Length: 218
Image (tube, helix red, strand yellow):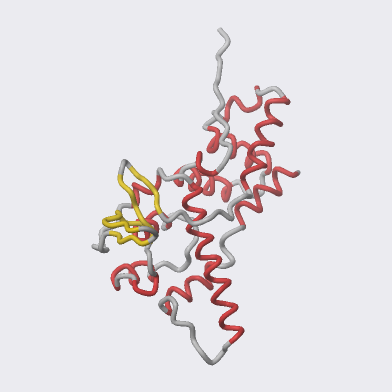
């Protein structure tokens, strides 16, 4: 009896969860020198397609799926989404980094970089907290209690995660420009340790997507 398989191909990052991306990243680092294995990882993690059936796909379907993945995978420079909804609860991004709670500042400072890795869900749980008040463009979020719920953010679409990452990337560029303009006058827009983390994070944003694009092009 012939088995029928359904392939769900994501059209953009909103259809890919953080957990999917982390699983993909882990496998891609394992098989980084094997282009065919990387393509198999993309199909498996992004399309939830069983690897053992990959060679049974007809060539037109295979090429069409690769093309769809190619079209969105490197589009990671997405805007920050100040509000996201998880399980019916609205979460707001830290409205003022320069005045964030000291505990939140300490907890973010313990990470070496602000990049999407195994620590990222915890960082998002610190930056995004339930909204308690909104008035026009202004809003307040729940006071940071030190409790981190990383599991909630593992199921959030990667469009939100990339938006937050590139918010910090753009902030890094602004800080670098400020430093060049005035070497003697230190910017006080955000805490010093966060600035150091941003500088370490600048080189960690693109490597994975660049590796995938090179593989797809080949």
